[in-house]
Length: 197
Image (tube, rainbow, N blue to C red; front, top):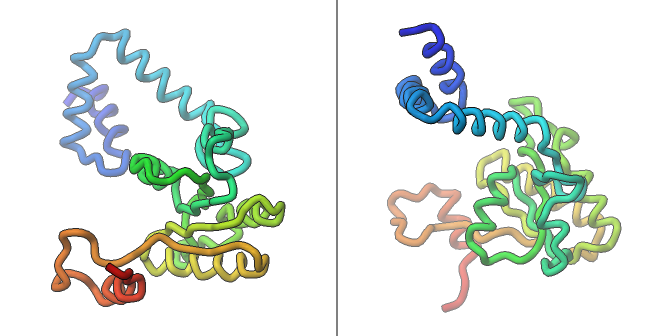
């Protein structure tokens, strides 16, 4: 393999979910693209990496100091959905079912990986609550041990403020799932979050 091709394949394969075969396909596709289009793509990636900011209010990605969601006056700013990563905001936004704002933690508490509460943007969330703008916080974190630990920690901290409603997204058996394949924690969440018909 030519060294230039090998270098490009090596760089692409550093991306999550991209193996060497997929990286080779991407590299070969770039080779077939017009040089101008490859240049536009390269500039967009470089600009994204150098110019992207984090919203000073919610820690979401932004082109400026405040993200589009936090700047939108039509959204309910008293309702804050707490998520782990920016990709979670994108997932929820695609449903078009939520009109509140967000708070991106930047991860979850994970002692095994050396991530504690001070490594996350929890204090930024608590500052928002302390200003009195927030009436409800929806915890939308993963159901992993780390996600549950983070939810418990945040819930304990939010309860110090007393007047903020704390909820979490429903958890349990998904539509079309069978009980045989669900683990005990998932079934327990489904029973706990049952609703009347």
